[in-house]
Length: 442
Image (cartoon, rainbow, N blue to C red; front, side, top):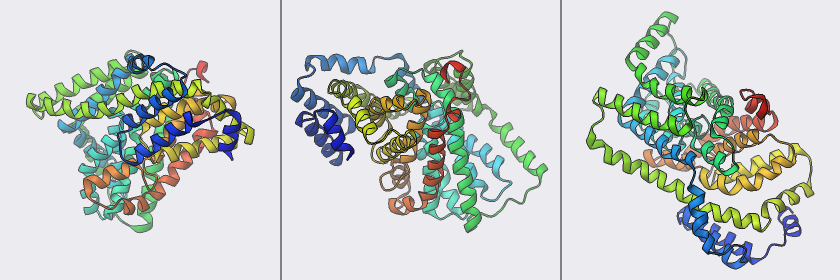
């Protein structure tokens, strides 16, 4: 019905359908996303003739010629250095000390350390791999079934793109022309809401099945435990402190905060003697590989977005959808459904650069605040990372543990449901995204 309405609104021919079919086919054949997007974009431009191919090179360059994107490799490198210096284990020690007073303590600590890692690296897959290697075996020893332990880490790692600073918010800010710092500030409450929803879900599940016992600790013992862990690992919190204070005080741009965090993390590693000069080649190569996946996608998405805009697809989509219904509540639900479905089959970056320009006019049409739209979009895509059957985090955790993806996916369902509740609240309650913002953005 929607597709027929879109066809009626915009005169789409094979210059649109063939590139789309080609894109889907290449993705299904496991061709790299950037290559699939580039092939579809060039095919669309050649068939439509709307933009000369000579302009593609310029479009590729301008797509990544943005100072804000410099922050992406810096946050990725910070996360890599964090793991190699052992500072991530200090986060786990503090998180475990904070939650050891209750049943399900180490499960809760796992979720908290995912949030702490997210506040530095800005990447969900990196968080899933790093935290999973540290915690899954210990979760199993604590009494959790291995598939559930994997699902818990996969869910907690979703905060990687939801808790600022986040690479996803940098990219959507670039695509839609919105300040990344503003999006970081707006994402604080929604990101914490997702983290709390995962914590609460784990506590409820643990109560129902008694996976993890314990929690018989006096207040004085708990306070002593927290003090000991903070005293031995306080320096690990210098890095997120610099990032948050620098960005939210306005003293540092996200790029400057990322650069400062890299330098400080390296210095701490040298002081602790957990980092050597010989570690640098491997760190740089590892970070470059991750960055090398993101930037080509952004670059090749630029000509695709231009081709779609010239063909009138975003405007046609808005007209087609509003032609079926003009009820804002229904349209918000439709957008959330599209984003979750997209998030479970494709990584965040291509989803942002392809869907944001298409869905943003629809959000504008129903009067949704643009900041609220961005937060809703990234949060919905985050839920897609653990949505069966193709959530990215499910594959990451399965890859490091060898556990069946299907078994992990089944155990992830409770987390999907509670996270979905938060997404719906973000979509229907603007204050969740705008409370911390200056009045000019509300």
